[in-house]
Image 1 (cartoon, rainbow, N blue to C red):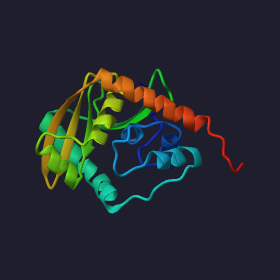
Image 2: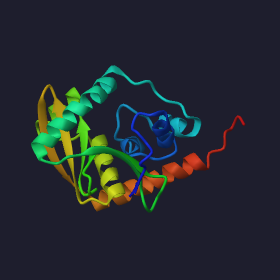
Image 3: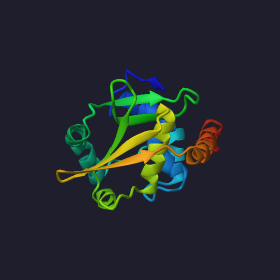
Length: 189
C-alpha cells in the first residue's frame, strides 16, 4: 500500500482524494449491501463531486472516534493512528483506516453506531462493513483485521479474517464501477 502522508482524514484535500478513488466505505454500496446508499448516487458523487450532508449519527460517530480509538488501544494493547493509503496494484482504490500500527502490520475499523453495536454484541457485523473491512485488508495486504464497536463506554472486538474469494468478486465489481466512472460521457455536455 502507498501511504498518503499529506492527507488528513476529514480535510478538504482528503474529500477530493476520496472523490477520485474507490474507497473502502464505497465497497458495500458497489456490492449493493448498503441500505443507506445507492449505487447511482455514488456514481454521481464520483463523477460530479456531489456529496450528501453528514447526518447526526455520522457526526456523533466521528466525534466519538478518538475516545473509541483510545479504548481500543487499552483493550487490544495496540497503538494505532489513522492512515490513508492507495492500493499498490490498483491506484484508483484507496482506504482510510481508523487505526494502523506504526509498523503497518495491523489495523482496526472503528464503529460507534447504536444499531451496529447491537449486532456486535451478538458477534455480527453488517454486510456493508464486512465489505469495507475486506477492501481494507486487500489494500493493506493483511490476513486479518480488527472490527471495534464502541458505544456508551462499551467496546466489542471482533476479529475478521481475509476472504480472498469475496475480495476477488468485490474487486471485479469495483473495477467495473470505476471504469463506468472514468468512461462516463455527460449526456448534457
